[in-house]
Image (cartoon, rainbow, N blue to C red; front, side, top):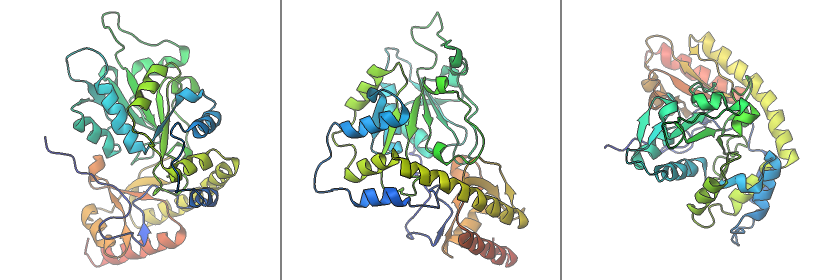
Length: 353
């Protein structure tokens, strides 16, 4: 099987763009409190291999038992690790299956392929279900929850009497963008979220995506699974800077900065959306400081992205997300928006797109 192409936003072979709309990082960042802690991290020593203080801090932050905190080198690392773990569960001979979001982060599918699992569109029939809310690239609610999870608020987990295991073993809610929610409400209750794996990668919300660090909160009844996933990770999965980032994430002043940044992002987003609409773009609604938009009729999105890149402006072509003809744009400050607007007018007026 041909490997899937790895396509990401952010810097590329041409370096860092002057105006990078292709990334979902918080454009108000970097968070000064978190940056100071990361810069002060002692890189001359190993972190505590058990990460006792970090686990305790994250457990307090989420109000859970420390065993529920599973540390990860990044969200992508955890995606591959839990996919491998799911493959090894159970005794049946049939290939394990994964339900992927219709439009979602490419590493869900990359891990599925790498570990030889099969994809399915039916969450109730899957061994592993990936959800992301707010989603990427659309920044919208997730819709394809398994039936047993929709009933979980009442404590009614669904097991088939004829099957030796639940119809859906593992649900992972990628919550990378939950801290950046600008509107809308979560579609799962607290009780429902307590029955799924919740994956967090705070570097996006803090505007420090170059620091790789993440963690998951295990379901309330998954202590053996959490221990198994901890056993699958190599020693020192986080370096000193990753530890510093996650410790900073739990601090009151960091959260206060994040809360303040959301108000700024709301204003920037409204301005950016209105600017694109004035140029004839179609904009999808989103709950996040990123969204998908379609150029005016007759403008090729792929060619436009390539042309803008030569001008120091990078958009994210959404073809790899299953949205050909659309682009994803992160919200940037007014100066960057004005540069994008001027470049779009020049490019389209010259008929170069």
